[in-house]
Image (tube, rainbow, N blue to C red; front, side, top):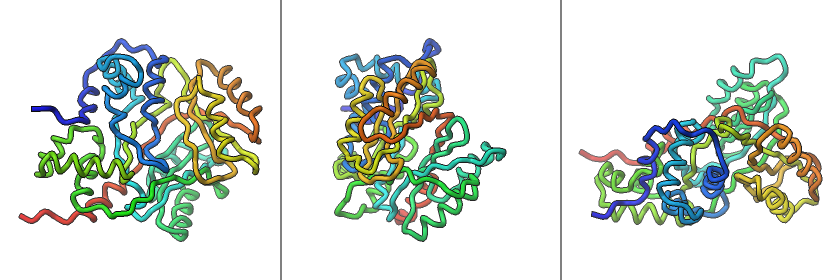
Length: 332
């Protein structure tokens, strides 16, 4: 019997103690995977499969699998997660930057921020900065979530970084659609044959529904990446304040200026005073400083800050509580 696709998590279970650090091929794999699980356009999750990655990079499938194993063992890659289009949850998403006041316990602030309603992810940077991504229903809900974030961090003047983009989807998800997404939470690349067996559905039904949702942008799948755990290299964010006249061409120009160092760049459709960041790699602190100076000299850029990520914490527990409310119980 032909094997169903999306069995990538199976190649993440073999230990390999020979890895000494992230190299150029690892960076190319991360860049090809595209680490952000959202965007204005649908993304093809098949690009996360080792055969697709190998073909795109001109290496063998076994090489890609070995690299994924090593990144997982180091804690850099924790697996893959599926995120429903927030529109299906009647929410939108935003990223906000908070500065924990001097003299405050930052670790306590991080732990408190993990409990914020609608949390999608938390970036804990070296120093006092914390970036919180969260989802909310409306303006009133946003105020309540921000109040929780302010209480957790102590920062009464947070900066709105950017808003999440999600495709507009014309249809509502069915109960079967939600059951498939629920089955993939935490193991987004598991074989669809397993999902079909678990749900008591035909494989062709699961595959058809899965492919339709992926094509229309009803969900996104992305790697669970913690840049702070990279070995042998620095993975850091370069954050830009853009001048008022900056356009999307400015954003693309910034991305192209760091083509050799780029790991990932998200180009937002909505603008904020601080509204663009790129994840770059560097070999030393001196290189980080040089890349920051390069960025500050680009057209349309007002200021640049390099942020070194101490840890990234995944959110989304609220999604796992929300999905079952959209799935009628199976009758005995």
